[in-house]
Amino acid sequence: MIKYDDIKNIIKIIEECSAVALTFYKQKNLEVSIKDDNSPVTKADLEISRIATNKLSEMFPNDKIISEENITKLNEVDMTKYWLIDPIDGTKEFIIKSGFFTINFALISNNKPVFGIICQPTTSSVWFNDNNKAYKIKKTYNILDAKELKPKTINYNKINMICSSTNLKSGIKNWLNIIDPLKILDIGSSLKFCYLAEGKYDIYPRSIPTMEWDTAAGHSILKASGGNIFTTNGLELYYGKNHFKNNNFIAFSNYKNFPSSKYFLEKVEDYKVYIKRIESASSSLKNGKLVVFPTETVFGLGAIGNNEQAISAIYAAKNRPQNNPLIAHFSSLEQVKKYVIFTDLANRLAANFWPGPLTMVLNINKKNRFSTILSRGKNTLAVRIPSHPVALDLISKSETPILAPSANKSGGVSPTSVEHVKQDFKILNGTTWEISDILDFDGCEVGIESSVVDCRNELPIILREGFITQKNIEDVMDIKIINKNFTNELMSPGMLQKHYAPKTKVLLNQKKYIAGSACLSFGKLPIAFRNCKHIFNLSLSENLFEASHLLYEGLRYLDKLDLKFIQVLPIPSIGIGKALNDRLKRASFNE
Image (cartoon, rainbow, N blue to C red; front, side):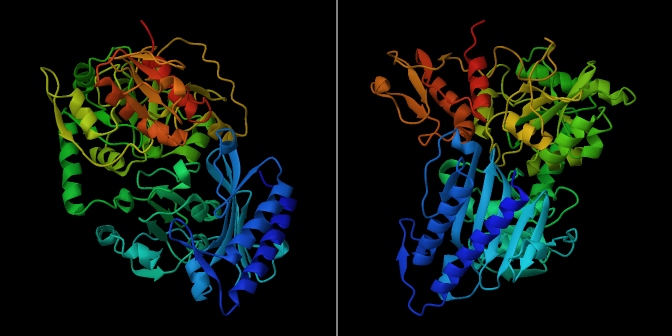
């Protein structure tokens, strides 16, 4: 993505910016202004922004350059590749002359950080990543002096935490009681990510607002050193969000296995009570009952995977067609490999996207008799490791895969809240089924179901679009995907022509208002719809991640109005927009 010679030139740019920063830093009477968001800004911020923007634009004329001090709205095409600049991260530290401030550049491709560079001017230190490795240069700004960062694996029994004092005061006391770190270092700026990448500290939680330019460079460097940044739903932090605002997150230094779910449970007040709820729900599953639980996509309706009667209960509770398969949810890769035949393709996708909102269709392992129960006699099985901590805990405690479709009546709009589940299941039992537990924890950050990929052969075939996009897969596989599904067999959920549908008829790509209808809009409302009284806007700022998160909420809200039609305005079929259009196309299908 970034060539070696390009990195050399970028280091020269950041060295120039560092010199500018130090010139202002040494001034006795530094002029400080206050921005609209009440954060401070200095002339150093503005001058470094100007230099970095201009010089990166010269190097990469086809890339959009976004600086904290010169925020530009991106259109959906630009979102595929752009630079984020934070001229002075830690402006407060810069003003009080603590030395703990940095300069940050990052390149984003398909919503992932692929290159980052951070400079601490007061120590002439530079951190960057190249070819999946992280490096540090001390003093010289010479790439030949770069030393690879090789941090030790986190010892979870001796956690050292790095955090800002502001964040420590923001209400993470309950979370700290769960984690119980040995030591906490209070420091500002993106140096926190650098220290994690070096292995000096283990974790960095964040529960107060940050922007994407605050994290992107550090994220890229940290990931190259073996660590990562995750949201509280267990998703890797992603970019191109609404107004560039980050969700709460936790960053980890080098780890061998995906971190325990307890590190993500910031809102759990009593961990012992939480564990008892998980144990109770797991016991219900083992007794053949159904359990509703949150995932990072939508709420799931789970049954234990080794009980055929429990699996049949899902179909009865949902009125689900018997030929529509279920996704088996697992808590570890080792567990998955007992039930299906893993291919090289599957291994590579799992390494990059699991745990997370990706489902893979693979051939069952016929040597394992439970595989046939999970697949309900089919030769293939759709498998997934969710990232949501509650889902992982429930599966792990149950010690058996959990089969789980969305927790709603079949064919209807999927649920992204407990309220949605209760709307569909006003009665929690039938003659052959019972929903014994509803784990009402926050979830559903993505808002739509997982991407589904047929991974049985050398090349992937996307069976259902989702949060993990074709471009994301192509980036990690270094291939061009040509989707050609030559079978009509239902190998995965989400392949039925009629699905995700409200009771009200859905009309797509509308340009003219029909009297007596509701409107599901995206972006600024066209003049042609000015007389519409019932509008749900998925994203006024035209952000596809926000639209994804709100899609099912919007459909359910408008459906309750019992109007003539739900008119859907055009949504760009780019990135996750392909998945949104897929769901809406199926919701509008006329049988």
